[in-house]
Length: 356
Ligand code: SF4
Ligand code: SF4
Image (cartoon, rainbow, N blue to C red):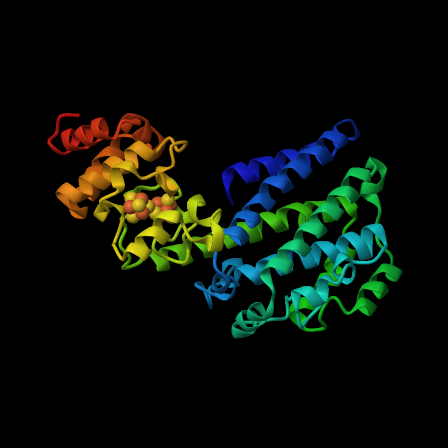
C-alpha cells in the first residue's frame, strides 16, 4: 500500500477511536477522500475511452486484474449501498437523477459476480463520463453523511431487517462471489463500515487503478518517438507514469487535455504543416503557440531544445536530456535553461561537450 496513504489511513482510524478526536478524524477522512478522488478525476480527464475497458493484467490475482471503469463502478456502488441502504436508510444515489440510465449499466449490483472477459464486456457498455458524475455524487453524499455522524453512533449495529432490505434491493448478486458481502457488512458496526467501504476499500482499488493506467501508458509508449512535437523529451518529462507520451492517445499533457478536442496547438499546427515537430518549422523562433506561449516558463527551454534537435538530431538531444536529468529534476532543468533560448541552446551544447 502507498506509504503516505497508509499512514494517513492509520492516523484517521486512531483518531476515530476517541470521542475527543472524533471530529478531527471525520475532517481528516473527508480531506483524505478528496485527495484519493483527485486520482480518479485525473484518470477520467486524462485517458481515452478505450482505456476504461482494457485489462492489462487480465488473469492476475488482485484488484489490478479489473478495468478502470469496473473499479470506479465497484467502489461507488458499494459505498452507495452501504451509505444509503444501511446508514442513512434512504434512496441510493444510483436511482436518483437518472444516474442508472445515463451510465447505461446493465447491472445494479456491486459487480463482484463478474469474472474475466465479463468485466471487460461490462466496462465497454458504461458511459464513463456519467459514471464519473455518479461517483462524484456518491462521494459528496457520503461526505455529508459522515459529517453529520455523532461519535455515539459508531457502535450502531445492523439488524436482520437491514439484511432483509439489502437482499430485497437486489443490489448484491446471489452469486457466491458476491452474496457474502451482505453478511460481511451486517457483521460490522458503523465504525467498521467507515474503516472499509469509505476508506481502505478506496485505497486498494485506486492503487489498482494506478497500476492499470501505468501499464496502459507503458504499452502506449512502446515503439513511439519519445521526442515531443514541441521539443520536450517524453522520456524525461515529469509526468512520468501518468502519460503515454505526446504522440499517443494517452497524452495527458495539459496543453492537450485543456485544448479543444484534446489536441495540443503544437501538434495541430505541425500536423497542418505536415512536419514531424516544431524543430522543422521556419517560424519556430517567433512562435507563441501552445508550449511556446509567452506566459509559459518553459517556453525558452523548449525552443532551445527544438533548435538543438534541428542542429544535432534527436538521438544526441535525448543523450543530453539524460545527462541533464541525471543531475537535476525536470523543474530545475527548465530553470537552468531559462527564458533566453539562445543562451539555453549554448547551455545544452556545453552539456554535450562536458562543460557543465
Ligand atoms: S505541449 Fe503539446 S507537443 Fe509539447 S509535450 Fe505537450 S502535448 Fe506534446
Ligand atoms: S508555427 Fe509554432 S506551433 Fe506551428 S509548427 Fe511552427 S513552431 Fe510549431
